[in-house]
Image (tube, rainbow, N blue to C red; front, side):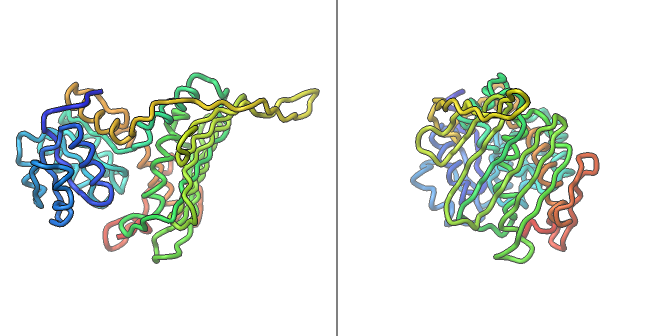
Length: 350
């Protein structure tokens, strides 16, 4: 990783999440421009990013030859068009999740980046979390045995979005981790949910993923919940692991617990638990530094366009299942969520 760079990055979108990217790229001394249509959002970053260019014009950013990387943190409905424009302008691109709102659009971005030999990185931040990196090592090293089941919860009484539903807002985090842990894409997806605050925009969803290896996973997400919970449980045939991101300490534990068979009968084994220690560096800082390193070395990001595309495929299939009242969607069938007059997948919102 590098901890500094020439001022070669522009952050587009300085609002709810973009301001965190501004802070980190400014801290890495890599920030050249901040861009937002809302002048007050730009003004709010004066102290965080002193001496950095400010503009309401995306085209002004793209016209600057000194800008090597464009970081897109605008509403999800703008990701595809802005990422495409940036790639066509010869820039490397870091786009927040989701990569796009349709698989075909995401595929177009991946192909364009490959054609232009550009870096295309998707902001799946938890893939840079030191505890998740360690969890992947534990799983891939076989410490848990064969993974049978994964379930995750991402719940909060938080910011209710009108651009995307809870599935597209919260679930990409866990879908990205689950696919990375199992190192395979699901063979079928099923999603069910409920709309309680806004018509056609799900506030709560439960998604079931079935994998070719025989493993299965569930992810439950909600922004209509009385308390915050961010937990992922991995059940292997030897041991189990829990990643709880709400804990100040002991976020990752391995449990030597399971079911043994003795004389043909299942017997519970409960030996104990082990806390795994990891680097406490801020995941977003690590993610931003990784983008700068990829710009410098021309290497492929951990969460490159292909990773973003795999997550997008699951999201699109889940959206289709949601629209069909929980009908399972096989990977061969594909998504194809219907479109509303606004041009967004039905249920994603405006």
